[in-house]
Image 1: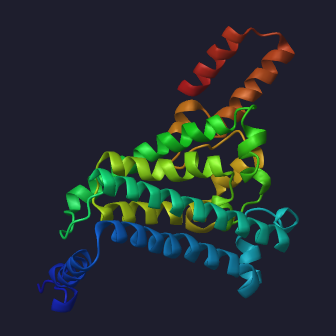
Image 2 (image 1 turned 90 degrees about the horizontal axis):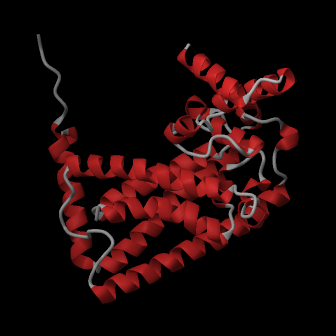
Image 3 (image 1 turned 90 degrees about the vertical axis):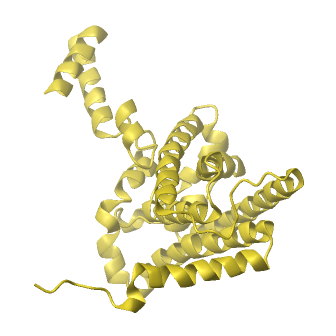
Length: 290
């Protein structure tokens, strides 16, 4: 039996060497501060603005295909003027993000303690996987709890209500937010985890690229990628369900839609029949065990 072999030009080593040599040349040619700032900006342009442009163009280029895959009906979709207003707010938030990043790099340069590792080596696969898995889990916690706090009655009208203007969201609305929310819920949950790990800058860029594609996709309003946007679409429509991204904390706290619906139904039936709260809890426990 003959075994399958990749052509020499497609072998992992052949693919790795030009990437490593290119990266080494970049590190030798530019300062760590320049590499971090410019590289992060490029990642944002490609992996945020690129998907936004693709998703937003479907309506005009492929209207029948777009209508077939839209999660919410046409009457709920934002108008052209609302999308242009969204664009202006997102551009403002992008400027805010880049300004804060430049200030962080300036402070890091003065103190000699960079947030990320910028060296000529390519991080090993084990390190990349470890740091990204850790960052995904911590980002979920930071985003979930900051998101729930922003739904507090005292904070929601002043801050988070802006983001919920789009009950049928579009990809660009992923960063349509109050400046405080942009920092607390959008920037910090993505940047803090790899900084705690002192990750290689390439690892941080890979993690950020994934998160940007994920957030534009779940805000896209389309049923692509096994209905990835459906849960967040429901959050924009019903507000008090699906606060997280992965879904683990929504399941743990009972904000995953199905559990909350069952709980409300049980409480409503209890109120009608005069059942005590203790009995409701017992019923819910029995239902869960079944």
